[in-house]
Length: 187
Length: 118
Image (cartoon, rainbow over all chains, first blue to last red; front, side, top):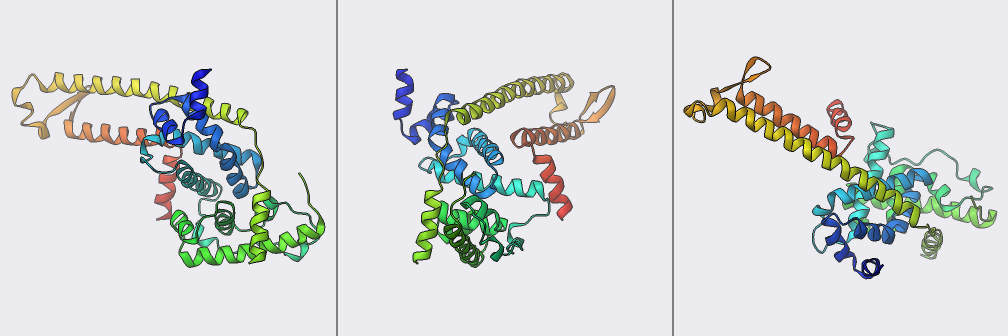
C-alpha cells in the first residue's frame, strides 16, 4: 500500500527509470497518468473509440519495449505522441497499402452545406476531413503543436502543414457554426 | 482570430474524461504477455546459440589450423558438408529477421510492401 503511494507520488522521470528495469507497477502508474490524453488524441484521429483504445494500447506496449531508447530528460508525453502518430500512420497504411500522407491532401467530397442541418460533435466533424488534414489539425489544436513541430513529426513540408491547418480549420469552423445552430449532439 | 479561439475552445471542451482502471489493466495484461514471449524467446535464442557454438567447436577444434582456414572450413549439417561462412550468414540472417519480427509483428508485411512499392 505504502509502495503504491510512493509510486503515485513519484515523478515521470523516476517512474520511467523504474519501468526501464521492467517494473510493471511503475509502468502502470505512467499508463494511468497519460492514458486519458493519449486515448483522446487517438479518438480525434480515428473517430472510432474501440480502434482508438486498441491503438493506444499498442502505443503503450511499444513504449514498454522501447523505454531503454527514451533519452534522459526527454519528455515522456512528447515521446508517446511521436509513437502514437507513427502508429496511426501505420494503421492507415495497413488499411490502404498505397496510402501516402503527402498525397492525401484533398478534402473528401462530402458537401459542407449538407452538414448544416446535422448536429456534429467534434469527432464527427474531424471525420469529415482527409487523413493528412485531420492529423495536422488535431496536432495543432488538440496538442497545441507549432507548425514546424508538426512538419518535423509527420515528415510533411512546412507549407503543406500550414495549408492543411488553414483549410481544415476553415472547414471545421463551418461545422462548428452548423453545430452551434443545430444544437449539440451526444452519442 | 476569434474564430480560431472558438475552434480551440471546442477542442478543449471536447476532451473526454476516461476511466483509467480497465484500460490500464488491459495494457498490463498485454505487457505481461509480451514479457512471457520475450522470456521464451530468450531461452530459445540461448539454446540455439549454445547448440551452434557446440556444433561449430566440435567441428573446428580437432584441427588446430581450423581458425586460420575458417573461410574454407565446412560443417556437417544434416549429413551434408556446408561452408561454415555460408552457415553463419544464413544463421545471422534468420536471427536478424526473427529479432525484427518479434519486435514488430508487421515487419515482414511492411518489408514486402516496401519491395513492391519500389
